[in-house]
Length: 372
Image 1 (tube, one colour):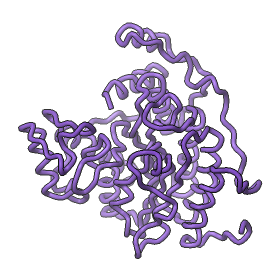
Image 2: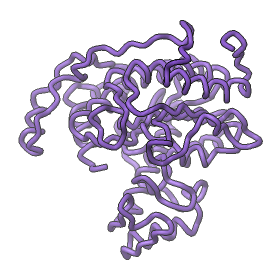
Image 3: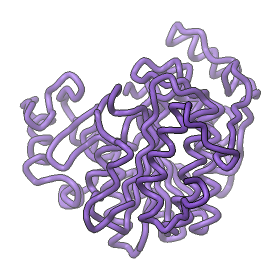
Image 4: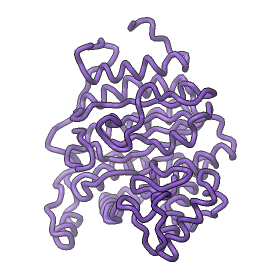
């Protein structure tokens, strides 16, 4: 989670000219009030974060001072700014001040009401969605492309029929946080609004795209959201050490492009993109997040484009690391077989996808009769 991920991404975006448009605003944010954090987190937990931040007082029962979430001076302030940035971006989109917005420091999807988890202190996505609802959003679609299940956001809206959370991730049977199974479909008042595509380890690019396209478009069209919030953790890449997926930069770029296109199709372009996981901090994260940013500013960058010379020199000089030469992988363009071309019962991927479709689609009024 080193801030070098953000530094390298913004340097790359700047040197590619993605931040130069007259209609592009790079904005800063202050702190979010504790009472706003309390829309998602308990007062006791917020107080514990303050104590860990101010006095280095651990509270392992609330996940603070642990290996995943070590306490440090200013932890509350840093985490609060991450939430404030996501909230400000969400409100700018909702009010029509921006068509799209992005906060790459956000996407802290594991934070729970009563505790920190998985490197996440406050759940910025959940807080922003709560405020979008207060501002008049009737239906919010949250899409999580991180390799890990978006459990904290799902938990926050488990029984809320007006927020649909969709997460595509490595199965909880083999990866943290151990949740997010196809049969997890929401609370009694919100059946079908928790959508989980749980993939086997070693899922590759085309398989990942096949799974995403087999579920997300039909779910989104059935739900008809007013705004889309998406999390773009890029730890599904084969170079990432914290998952066992093998999804290329180009495939993840296509996944982000699908979310972008659905925002234009369904909700007048209202789209907020967030960062998230990603631990190949030089070779993958800045490249992938720059692709997401390029979609936000409608200046898409091809994977074959060479990374700027000055950016590569910075990495060699200050990080003593061989930098990526292009905006993609050596794997070439990712392609997939459309779900409409048939289901393969021998495929682990297809069985996982079908489990999700079978569990969720009937609750959303999506017809499955043609494939049963």
